[in-house]
Length: 272
Image (tube, rainbow, N blue to C red; front, side, top):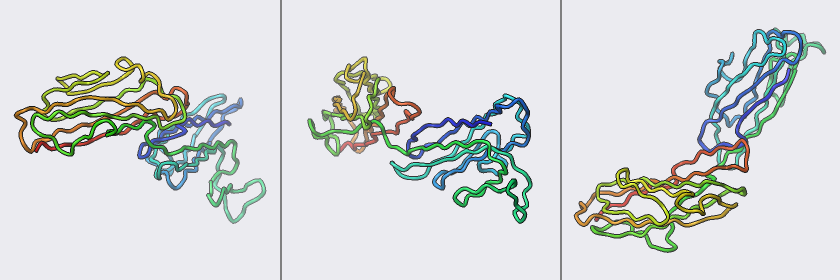
């Protein structure tokens, strides 16, 4: 019996981690009462599986696995920990019997691994998986290298914004996209340098079609984006203008990694 486990080799902090466990009977005979179990680290909270586990954690019993057949199990949970932490998982297959722990023999021995007791009498296969907790692979933030961004806006104000984006990985990223959502009724006009602004949705977009530099970003490389926002002359004092920004890209040089990105920018200015 062989076991194969597919999962991301890194997971974004705070996100769900999914596993696909495939068990295969490589023999010409059916196997009954096959046990599949996962030894999960303490910093992983099991949430669900399909089919359901027999212990509501991470053990499954296959009543009959026919000759040459495969059986799939999906398992999900949430990693706990900080960026840089690594989670270590071990998956087993084997047979289990009603074992009398007080009467063990050499052919009927309960398997123990680092004081973790498995009710498997005969282990067929084993596989290990390591998953690393990571942060944003792309950063996006306001930069004041070119312009000072005020803490508050005035009526009829014109504000020059610059954004810095950066590749946090040692690999090349491609097809970088940056989008900003502007929120507020007192925006008179927006001018975007090397980008696109949709006045109806109040969205700004930069991608490889508007700026060639965003087609590829080398390891740890950074770049600058610019736009100009003008506040209405009759803007109401006390109203607010909010900007929410997100950046994403394609990690084409890496396998089994997540493209998930959190919101990078969420800032509000008051009109005074």
